[in-house]
Length: 136
Image (tube, helix red, strand yellow):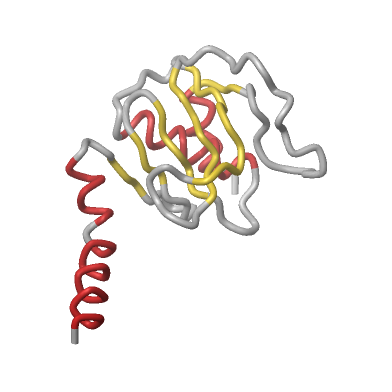
């Protein structure tokens, strides 16, 4: 009986985790390309998905920065990290973006075996990134 009570409490805590993140100012958006974007005004993540490419990640980041954060079309999106564990969703990998963020000092940790996808330090304007949504 005690074990069941502990499991019930754990399940309720896990189910409420996304709500707790939302209460901390975390915003999320699911653009038409199906990628989920989560984060705050300073740093946000685009959760990875099999088959998604560089244009998909920049499209999602551009839509989120412009629509949710109110970034200007001329603001720059900078890739801060690639395929790192998400800070907002357990067991998910993410591409981390910043708006008008300085380029990372070190790019040594890049996955050199990867062929496609965004690279650390890569940047594009919010307007260009949003335009990638209509390329397909």
